[in-house]
Figure (cartoon, rainbow, N blue to C red):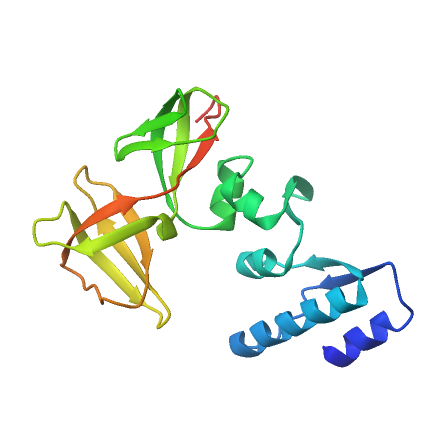
Length: 202
């Protein structure tokens, strides 16, 4: 990959196309090479069109991210803007997991079955609200309203599935400590939510 990139950059092109360049690498090597490639491109001041089906990779390497569906560009924006303000429910789900609930926006507040949250959404009335795992913080509490029903430990963090009071399931991505286990009672707090205009057929 390094040699191929050096050869491609030798003529000082205005734009370079990288189509799934890391697909044959294992995960640790893939992340290392990705950082190196980005550094080389920045140093060379070369624009690159980077094609990938890996959402995390797309978010990590891009300055501007374009999401395509059925051969058409659905939304283009800097990765942090696109992640926080997806154009629709499909884009939101494509970029990362989470739980959807219904909500109502009024006077800068979205009201949902799981609480009321501030929002900068310009829409009003009925909306879809996406709660991403990294926005759910949990604390061990034997009298808590949520139950841990699934747990995945990754070393750097843990992904916990919660069964909350109204029967819904929420995903929570928390740090590596403390360790939560299936059957634990916890309380939870939700931070920022993603508000999406409800489609007519949803």
